[in-house]
Amino acid sequence: MKRFFALLLAAILCLSFAACGGNNDAEVVDGNDGSETVVDEVPNAADLVSDAFIDPVKDWAQYDALIDEIKACTDYAKRTELMHQAEDILMSNYCVIPFYFYNDIYLQKDYVEGVFANLFGTKFFMYASLGNGSDTLRLNLASEPAYLDPALNSSVDGACLAANSFSGLYTYNADGVTSPACAEGYTVSEDGLTYTVTLKSDLKWSNGDPLTAADFEYSWKRAASEETAADYGYMFSGFVGYPNELAVTAVDDVTLEFVLSAPCAYIEDLMAFPTFFPVHKASVEANADPAAPGKWAQDAGFVSNGAYVCTGWSHDVSMTYVKNPNFWDAENVKVEKLEFMLSDDDTAIYAAYNAGDIDFADTVPTDEIASLLSNPEFHIVDNLGTYYAAFNCKSSLFDGKTPEEAVCMRKAITLLVDRDYICENIGQTGQKPANAFIPYGMADGNGGVFKTEIVEQGYYDPYGITNDYEGTLEEARTLLKAAGYKFDEDGTLSDETPISLTYLTNNTSGHVAVAESMQQDFAALGIDMTINTLDWNVFLEERKAGNFDFAREGWLADFNDPINMLEMWITASGNNDCQFGR
Image (tube, rainbow, N blue to C red; front, side, top):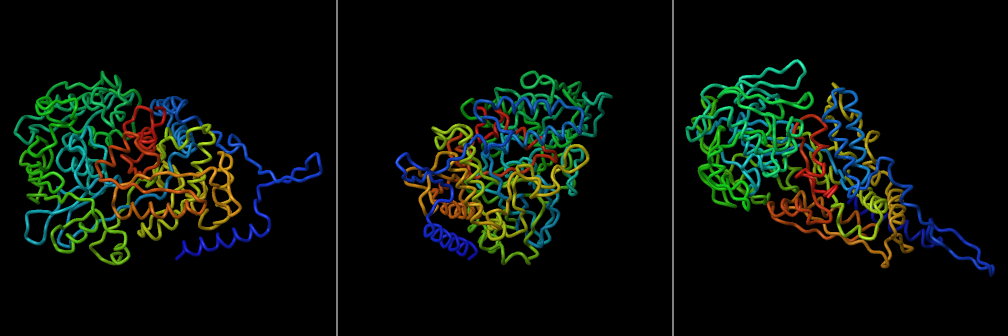
């Protein structure tokens, strides 16, 4: 209803403008013969871009160098300042279009207890208990996982599976605090660079093989190496010898030593992150296939070291995990079996939950959220992350445009998105409209908070299209004119200079609803947007490969420090979907 009245108002205003003579951005020029000609004023795109702007294709090495400087900086106040500079550069090209800052929702039966999640979206099921007499927890996280190899995974659902079937040196407890897992603890040298980790004694793989410090040395070197090409390999960039001569050594079976190039305040978070989990060397090497990375963990029965072992996998249908008796904390694992429904059809998932076929559902259809807000089985938990869309900076959409003109085009589209509508009518669970990539409330790495106020500390007014609809449309027109576009008297794009783009998303109802909302927003200026929905794994691969113009994105922080949301955009990062620097 809100959108209807907004569009009606725009139509009335446009008719009023036409009756009064049309374009506000025109000037009258006197001719030599005394005649008068109306000429559009065309703003200069270079005057409309931020001072922080650099060409995201040709000059992105400057951003890479800044991230290297941040990671080497030992002055934490200076480091925070540099991270603000990095976000300024990132946001100045308007390839990243934030919509809102995340929270998380899920459904859980009242007889399930002990499931917990951290701020980064990882859910832990190994300490669950069931009050209904069953020994099996039935759940849905997502559809078919792309990878179960923890070094290759880059999705949140994959991280959840990894956290419950593998175990790193550290993990997160129910309070969201890092705590020892395979490690007993560690010592660090006086300069904060050399770490010596002591492992628990008698650690084992799920097949009974001894698990030693050498497994961590092998796994970390594999994950960091250029040959593996892991999306998250850059998380080892703070280690001496990165990428191919990583300074990590198994001193003996229970002692692991590694050396950093600069002190790292979040080292325990890294040791708790899936990319740092150990993998079983013999299994990996027995199934080595350059054409199929992660092949060793693409079917049931692969060796792991976490609370559960995958024993059944009907691809695209279901997965079964059973308790691992060799897990270091097996005595505290109460649920014997996890059964996963593999689907991203939230209507089917919701039906399965209501029918009693699953006990836990990690998604809810958008049109059911309002009715669930007072249901004690519906949970809303804090997250630290940003839901956004991204432009491929190398898209043919920008052919013939200068880098500055492309920025103006993308910024205009950014301003048109009605974030308040998305939060209130699609999200419905208290999400905050976003105007920056680093999420509101994230720590700044220096004892403070990176952003304490949304509107003033962002890069545009996230409520602009809501509070000043016609003024925001006019600002978008000005930007598009600077990018070379022309407008008819009704305020929409001329047929001479149309804009047609395709938005790539997966087919969950909430994501499609966001896409449809944007489609209406853009139509106010005559921008035509086609929605292309794909199955989850195909969507991930197309996005990663840069086979898109404009795509749905979302990023949950990997740990509570801005660097993890900034370093993902370096040229070599496997998470650099915008294709910066390539």
